[in-house]
Structures are given as structure tokens and as C-alpha cells.
Image (tube, rainbow, N blue to C red; front, side, top):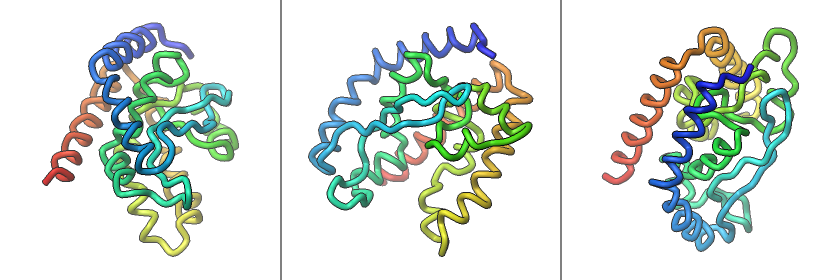
Length: 193
């Protein structure tokens, strides 16, 4: 299920991205280190065909207590914490568009038709990620956030990602990328005001 056009696009765009905005990762990680005690966060995620890989993010949680810091909240809301995933895309572990990579215990536990999602590389952007752009705020309002995630949000993400699987196209990916970029810049403008 490897699409050479998609991989070439990912390789080209991640290279351009790292050359043009990759330098931003260092100061963001430096300020994250000052704020949280750690600059880059590395975590195991489930990748294509259920293989585990290490995803990179700029740390947004305080090392001492696991709480999201003020700077971390900005990073997460603007999605700048995910810039280091350009390296994951460059290495071929991720794609620009596809289901967001999840921790073990979710996508790797899917059954039946839902397991088709494991044929896809995890992505930086997806329709499900756009719908749940501010998932943390949504979960914070729930009495039982983990239960709500497992019973409502995750099944909806699976449904949306299966829809992507069945209808994916190069131009569909471009559309998702543009929507994601516009959402990110809109959030950054609101945060700056």
C-alpha cells in the first residue's frame, strides 16, 4: 500500500519544510526545556502495519508534575509541538496526511475491516484531527475523559479515517493539508490577539 507519488511528495515537502522552518524547532525546544525541563519529547506510537516507531514532539508538559504549561498550551494549540515530526516524515515513518499516530492499545487493537487503517502510514494531518483540533479542551469538560475518548472520540476517528482510506487521493490530501494549515494559522492569530 505504498504510493510512490505520495512518498515523493512527503519526501520533497518534508525536506523543504525542514530547510525553511526546521530552524524554528531549536528555539522552540530550548524554551520548552526552560519551561518544562525537557526539550524534545519522544514516545512510542503505532505505525504502518502495526510496527512501533518513535515519534518526536516538542515537550509541552512539566517534567515535575505532568501538567501542561502555559507555553506548552500555546505549542499544542498552534500545533508547533508537532514540527519535529517532519523528521518522522522524512524517515518514511509518517506521511503528511493519514490517521494521527496513536499510542499502543488503540489502532493496533482494531478488528475486522477497521484494521485496514494499519495499511496507512500515520499522518501529521487528517480530517479527524481537524474535527478534534482542540481535543484536550473537549476532554477537559468531561467527567470521565478516558471513557469519553474510548467510547465516542476514538470510534469517530476510526470511522473518519476509514472514510479517508476508502476515498484517499492526492488532491484530497492537498485539500486536507491546506485546511490544516489554515486552521493552524487561524489559531495562532487568535492566540496572538
